[in-house]
Amino acid sequence: MISVPEAISFIQQIPISHKIQEVPLSDAGYKILGRTTVSKINMPPFRQSAMDGYAVQLHNSAAYKVIGEIKAGDAVDIELAQGEAVRIFTGAPVPKTANCIIIQEHTERKGDYFIATKNYTANQNIRPVGEQIKEGDIALKKGTMLTPAAIGFLAGLGFAKVPILPAPKVGIITTGNELVEPGNPLPTGKIYESNTIQLQACLSKAGINGITTYKVQDDYPSTVNTIANAMANNDLILISGGISVGDYDFVKEALQELAVKQTFYKVNQKPGKPLYFGTHDQTYIFALPGNPASSLTCFYIYVIPLLHRLLGYPHTGLKKAVFKLSKALSKPGSRAQFLKAQVKDGECHILEGQNSSMLHTYSVANALAYIPENLTSLQAGENIEVYLLP
Ligand SMILES: Nc1nc2c(c(=O)[nH]1)N[C@H]1C(S)=C(S)[C@@H](COP(=O)(O)OP(=O)(O)OC[C@H]3O[C@@H](n4cnc5c(N)ncnc54)[C@H](O)[C@@H]3O)O[C@H]1N2
Ligand code: MOO
Image (cartoon, rainbow, N blue to C red; front, side):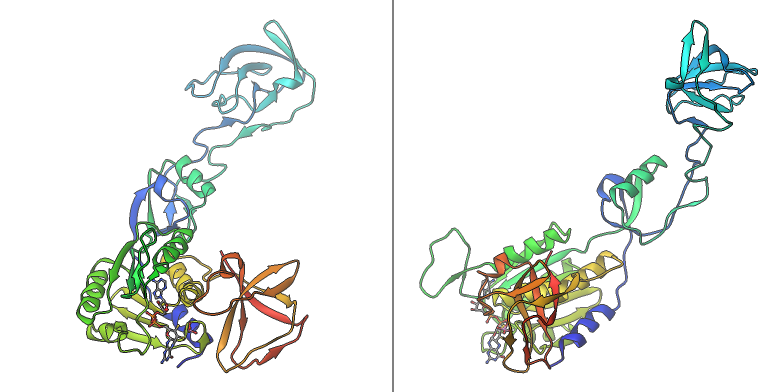
């Protein structure tokens, strides 16, 4: 059995090789850019007026003669002599011979002339060619998250497609003879299946959709076949249940038969002791303990950091913070614990219902408090490290 820090460090260090996929810009939101992109144009592509007003060739007098008009989208150049002006609008090309835009609020128009009511100097309100970026310069570097601004920036440079790191394909395998789909009657001895939808909700929050789900009974051949099928079609597989030591827990043996390379099995933690992680070529496989709270906590602490790495995020894992414990606590046993908690106003309140099978208080938790294995008690007011839930 390994410790929590050891298990986390295995996940942080497991080698990942990213694929790159060209996608329409409209599908690239919040994805990670797979290659450095270089601008093919100057932005702006021409000298551009930044305001509505008059493009002028400055001279010593405040009076200017208006000899024409240029609006956004026009492709004209009007030659100006000193003291001449053209009416111009925001985004329109500035004539080569103009050296300033006087905004219309600073003018008094009289027929073909206007009087400037403020002093202007050269280059005011003109956006020079390539002011934002020049042709051939790096627009965004590989590894940049494509935020709405980044998407807008690339669209403004004319990109219709971008290379991204695609989201991994994820499969969820749920095991257990006792499981019944919610919405059906509940026969004796059965329980409603909740881990699949819970994990799907987690994945969807992490930006992963199109998940394939598989259900398998506690039966060895079906477990092997289902895992083999999932391995052929997914980059990441989450198996729920059947990973402990009972006579009907077949997952570990099935993974072994399928030549999955075990990275670790069993972590000195509560909940989630029988957590398994392994790899098969480029497929990453977690076997999450079946207890619903164990499965969820293992997702937050171990699956999320791997997912973030697969997605190419620069920072991986849930955000951590330190809060003051609101009430003293003692930790029996030598396993590290992740406790369902609520944090607010600088304090961490440990919730009731910590059992691995219970989700009631987990539903209102916004954090998991971490008690390392070597700590046995904490006083009220002491600092406690928490993982903030997404
Ligand atoms: N002799 C031992 N027994 C157990 C140990 C141990 O070390 N020695 N570890 C315990 C711990 S800790 C955990 S956690 C569980 C994990 O067992 P499995 O991963 O094999 O999970 P199952 O036995 O299949 O299920 C456990 C529990 O969770 C319920 N469950 C399972 N799947 C779902 C689902 N999809 N939706 C809702 N609930 C689910 C299941 O009915 C069981 O009640 O093992 C302990 N045993
Ligand atoms: O590890 Mo189990 O999740 O304690 O019940």
